[in-house]
Amino acid sequence: MTSRNPAAAYRSTAVETRVHEADPHRLIELMLEGAIQRLRTAAACTESGDVVRKARAASEAGAIVDSLSGCLDLAQGGDIAQRLEALYDYAARRIVAANAGNDPAGFTEVAGLLEEVHGAWKQIRPA
Image (tube, rainbow, N blue to C red; front, side, top):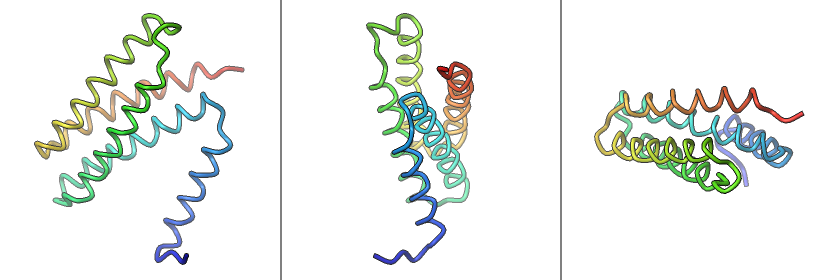
């Protein structure tokens, strides 16, 4: 199969390689990065009027947030896991509302929240 966009094919291969080589902690980090990137794309597409790309990016971001929520171990994670679950629930609802309302600020808000989680997650990397 020949790609019409070699740069996109390269990026896809690079991401796939990082995922296959990642430990569980790094996988969560990659998921957070992916959600943030898609939220930024959704905000930019909302502002430029690219409804199709906005909807795709928002849908992908929402799916990643749902997956992050599904990764939580509420029995072992205690209060932190419960707070993250509430945050991910809020983020998912906010993404849907921002998508439906063509609200770039909603996407930006959720990206900011996930950036905070991402920063904290990077700091607790196991040895």
